Length: 253
Length: 364
Image (cartoon, rainbow over all chains, first blue to last red; front, side, top):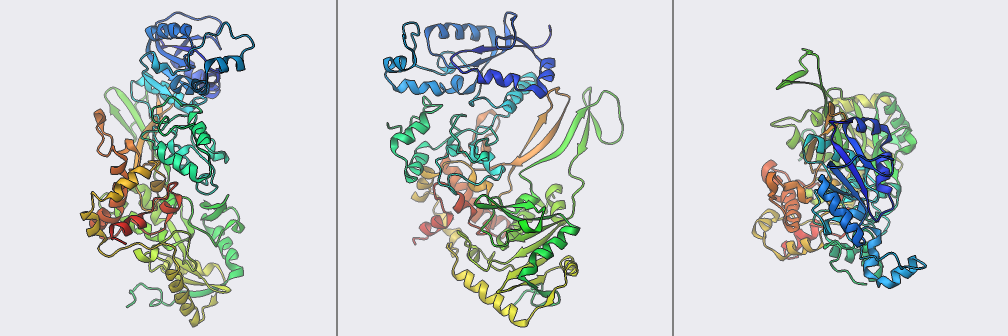
């Protein structure tokens, strides 16, 4: 395998769904293995070869002191460090615990919470420099492949920064917000998913995190106009990317 | 005075089609051409190739995407390319340093098709797009597709939910730009041919002669529709008002409300911007060059190398769309860039309405 760029996949607090997307690349997985050496991937390989690595993909949010140490090692041994998935890029679903008393969270999850010692849930970029982010819950396979190809070529990957609405319109979906009055997060959420949920008549829940220059205050006003209570609106914005500075705007409980 | 090419002047080719026979005529068209027409999708309508004449929605609100999508597709492949080891001299390969790249053009074969049930606003949008795509530097994709598309238009005998075409002189009755034009009357359609190709289509069905009073009924219906349109746009002095009010508080209000989501431009029948990018296969040996609709409402649109952005602020982008449609295109092409279809108004999640903006500027 020598000569190929070496790739490592690290896991922190997460459901492992984003790592699984590497294996879900099935139709092109063999092609991928012809281009890179996946040297460290605990989910799929029993043996790991040591760093340094050309690309380190980090899945999961950082929730305790041990994580912080492991993350700094990953940063040190990876030329490019890439946060993958909502947990790593924005704190993820578990970051809703950041707005609750920690004792309450621990006792609701663990019978005897003596060994967890959790901090709040933070994205990877809170602790180390991140070279690229692929958000989503899970990440989008096409964006993952696009990133790897671009990294191999040394060019900027085409990762869509704009709203889900663009891809939703390109798919000519019926607008769930306008035509059906459903609270769809699409207008403030980054695309790249080919409008996966709205294409199946389900409002966007926001797993890709904020789009570029999103207008959170205005969508909150629109949601209120649909009859949603302020606390309900806040829950929409806290689901995956609660720590995001934009998403905290107008945040009320 | 009627234009020379007005169908009433060229009265040959004006016939009647009983309402019950509409779908028979569509089926006859489908025998000869692919027919793209509005069909129901959920609660809305979309243009799609008919598989069965029964799918046709002949009484419809504006489609989600405009008929433009048939001529300038949302996503299309411009060409594909592959790296070649062997030297193949067939005019499609070129040397880039030591590499040899061969291209396959995807723009060549365009099939003749019928675009059926297009409303006057959308037909008029083609006239705007023709200025952009088929004048100085013709765009082969759009122009070939345009030439090979027969237009069976349909006058609007009822107002749609947010149109203001009458004030932009783009509807509810169509003046030109069609091969056939249908107007729905009580129990029959008045069918008028606007071109030789349209007259040829009349041979596909045993039409009845049109009674003279049908034209009168058409004019009355269209005049009534004009009066009942849900929106109006102030057009007198609009160019001057826009020029004088670059700093008007209405723009600040837009920036506060605009989600920057890009929907208004995606659904616009006259927006023509696109982005071009290469998509490589994983082996990095071959790929395709694609182009996709783009939008000036997106922050990245005006970003250039090294990161500078000419319209970084949401207000600048919200303002640009309206200025471009209502002022700059007027100056550049001598006709407005807005055909009054109202799609941007209906689709906007925060109710931004360019007719309201015009009224505010006019002090209404």
